[in-house]
Length: 278
Ligand code: URA
Image (tube, rainbow, N blue to C red; front, side):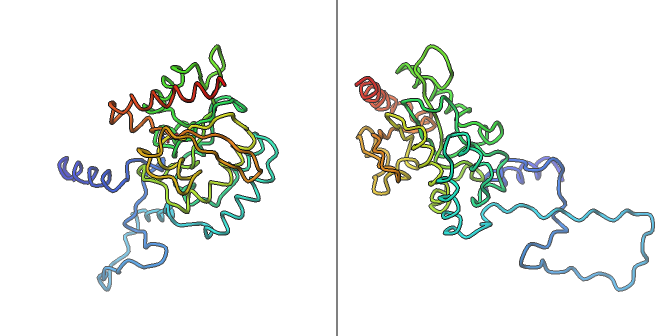
């Protein structure tokens, strides 16, 4: 294949959301016939002398197909609820999330990305889902959006690192990277939700910030889009009966694309600082 054709192929892959290599060795998918439908067979010449010396190609490994739900969503949600309820502290909850196989995103992800920062902090932030950098490293918000988030936190005297600043704790509505960074589906969000809810209960923060639409609508189904919901406090009542004030604001990745909106995000941060100091 020449360089122009190769570039066109890679561009097409990227546009289709295939922007990552998931295996250490390349697979020969020309031999793969798919899980359900067989590829049409190319007719072979009737008699061909076997070529003694040529090695047989190794059968291609069955590829992982993100989106193939290992368990139906209802069963997965029930299993997530049971596993989350059984966790009595953050550490056992992390273990339960790591061991959970009910989310169809898991087989396509490199890492389970759960949380970062200081458990039990009065300020908890909830993002959407791990991106490429987070999937590679195994921690939420480590890419450019994460660096902006750290600066936003520092501006109100908080940090996810131990140190002089007041503590913050960060998680996401989803623990596995959606392929090509697509938005998570309703089913994926619902499957992860019992764990998110338990993370909230066990951390018992004074205030939660939701970053963008996905985590906001994960906690409040009726919330309008983030442009309308940001800056207005809502109360989230957990299954265990705790009521926690939540302020939706813009996602830092959006602020990187729309820097003019930082003014509104700054107003939200000031609100949060006031509430934390009250
Ligand atoms: N965006 C998110 O919402 N979460 C991350 O962890 C990284 C980017």
